[in-house]
Amino acid sequence: MGEYYKMTIAGCERELPICPISDTLDIAGFVMLGDVEITEKTAAALLEKCPEHDVVVTAETKGIPLCYEMARQGCRRYIVARKSVKAYMRNPIHVEVKSITTDHVQKLYLAEDDYKGLNGKRVLIVDDVISTGESLAAMEDLVRQFGGNIVGRACVLAEGDAKDRDDIIYLEPLPLFFK
Image 1 (cartoon, rainbow, N blue to C red):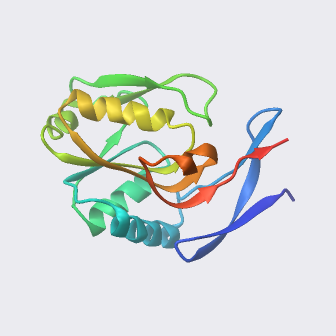
Image 2: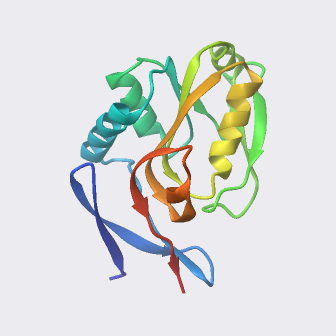
């Protein structure tokens, strides 16, 4: 049995598994997928802290439950930037992103039906964890390309130095574990 980092998030106690990222760094793995209680409670807690918005935007995959639940409890509209082009996506546009949890550059795509709906809208960008900010920056690029007005950036956990940023809203800091 491996090591865990115990923490309380929006009133929910969780034990996050410690996962190796490199020879010098481990992270505590936070996964909302399948955890309805933490999804509902973190969405409500973040909405209390976030500015008014018309649409919530995230990147697939791990931010989707949070994005959906924040939209369900709040503005009623959300958009997911996809990691690959699907057959039903008309005229997709992409940006490139490098994340701490992936070992290669990824692309994030929005379909025409989604990006047309961003123009002039107040956009709240959300994710489960913000660490390096690379995924966040890519989502910001996509939103701005199509005239969206970014009114906030929110996440459940701010990992490492992200906790010191003054441009994100988060519920709890999450340490990095250096070896």
